[in-house]
Image (cartoon, rainbow, N blue to C red; front, side, top):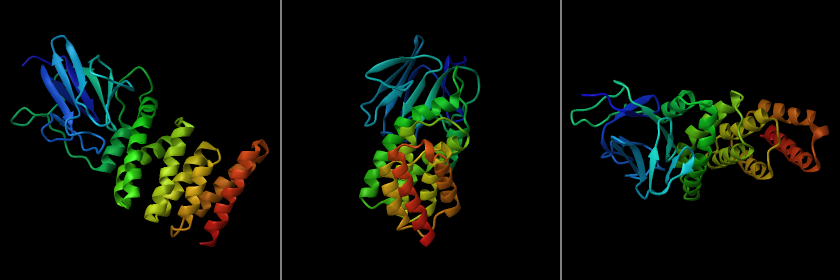
Length: 282
């Protein structure tokens, strides 16, 4: 069989695209089945012809993006384009022999990955491209995080803390790793991640989620905004323990910068010092 002109990269796996339709969705009937609550059963279809590759959103709930832009109708793809489906990213590449496994019916198959495996794959994978792949990945996942957080918020409202934690664990872990590596994260993304981590601490009574929020702002070297502090106060009253040494190191960092802080940030520092006192009493 002649080599294919295009392949689709998902995580570390390359899937050959032959002429015809290639469906992507949650359904096992799709050529690529994605285990993601933000993906519809039949989310999108790639139409491969001798002229190239087109992608169409199959009226999915959360839409399809190409290079970070949501598409409407059929959209032509080129080699190197990044496709966003749910919180997953796929990249269209030029074809080559090998790199794909098929079953007896010719359907592409991928090994099952646990949630932690997926988080590790997304953090360490480096799809080819002209820009820094890690920075691009973080930027494009900001919108996907907002979608996941919205779903998790609904789960929390229904008392399903375990489900909310399952949804957010992988993307929050990825953001923490990026922060530790010194990657630039937008203030908006950090605030959203910290706020939901604090909400998870409140809902699950796990101090590690409160520690997560403190770690993010310590790495960024800035004060927590008021909504995050409010949620941390709720969390600190419910969790069994927090990392007091980390919190104290964060407070010390802010005190060293106090002379350069404006009135609003100084007030926030006072509230964070209140968190330190509250944690010390537990």
